[in-house]
Image (cartoon, rainbow, N blue to C red; front, side, top):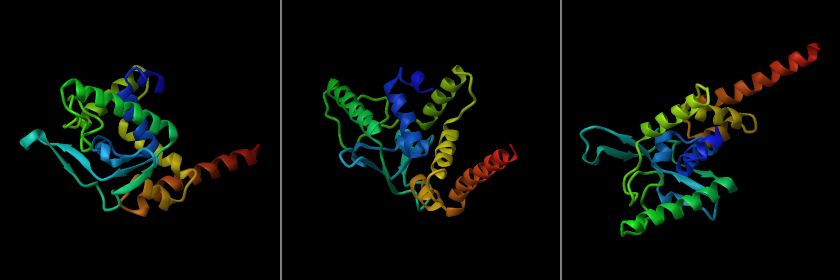
Length: 193
């Protein structure tokens, strides 16, 4: 799937951010350049984007889904590298229309000045088409579950909660419980051999 996404660097970065951080699609779409500390290799989750008919501009940027939604999330070196490259592309696009890339502009957008975020549903559809073209039934939201499950293999529920922005420890415990149950299941199978 990664090779197919690489044909579109912006989409590749969107998918990678979702996988690497576990952010909800609306949280990824809500990211603005000042939410990033690329030298410190972290991002600040501070909002969520919703598109609603009848609103001026068509969308609202509001706080995260839960009280634990505002959080700092560490980034790996490759994701930081891709973000730097993406920033250079967005700055070039803004200059092409005679403006500079503002710090409060959105990372993912369809407008040259980056003042308006891309619709979360557009990214969901793109992910679905990519998965279907590869013969999979993966979903963008399923990627978030995958990330939580992978984190549950190496971290305690409280760490999973903090990184994923879950509203309760109970939700995060589901992922760590599943991983432990899978490990015990595999252990039983191996013991029977």
